[in-house]
Length: 322
Image (cartoon, rainbow, N blue to C red; front, side, top):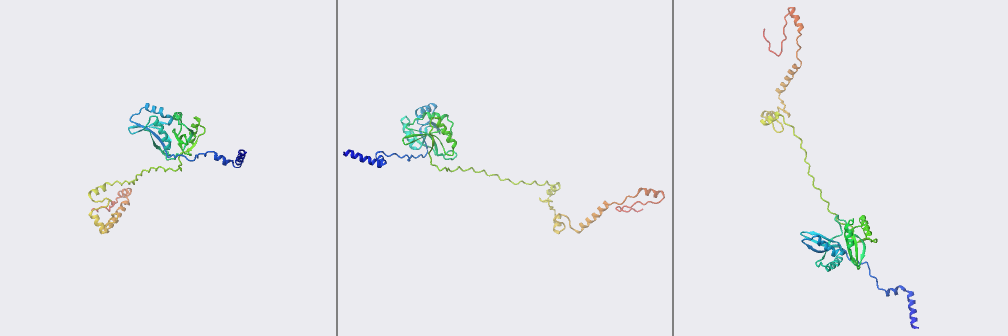
């Protein structure tokens, strides 16, 4: 009776508040809000070689291709063998341990790149298409070798017991990039891909300084050509009778200027010179208006009549006595 009575009481309590009873009997779920920090992209450096041929690179791919992309980069006289692209140092260190088990005992993680491209644009997302318990990506590595994508890099991020596989880095403004990665994931059989945030950048990246324009050469004013000197001026300058400006430098000219006998243009202003100019003007006018020539017909008639013809007297000549 007591057992039946206790069972009835338990049923009544369950009907009154079923959520509380079930919560006490089930373990609490783990929160998925906490995510490991992704500070940068890392690579795993496997070793450095003075000489590396194609056979050595092929051997490394055979051993490690399922862990990520194998590559070789030159630095000085050495060739460095590197593995994959890993989001966050904790993920890289996890793969380092696996690489050491496969014979690369000197392997270590190195920071490869920040989340920005060569143009200074922020890269905030990667296109995630799968999450697996065991890292086996050899088929994806081969497919990415020939894929036509903006970025053929395969990224691995370990979180909550899973390896999250993604391709490329971009920001949400690069819609064509996101579409290309989505199409590649669909071709590989992953139809549930999405853009995963890897960096909480606010989108601001300091722009590169613009190159300063080269200073322009100052244009020199064009010099006007000087008038060619006259032959007389050259002679006067050679004889020292004129200065560089063409002004007379003779002693008489200087005296005339000092005595006020010449004006600024070098013309004489004395009374005698004025009279000479007036007389010259009269003489010039007589040349301009010459006396009328004698009529030859009348002269012949006078001779025939017995009249004496007196030749006209030239005023400019001295009179001759008969």
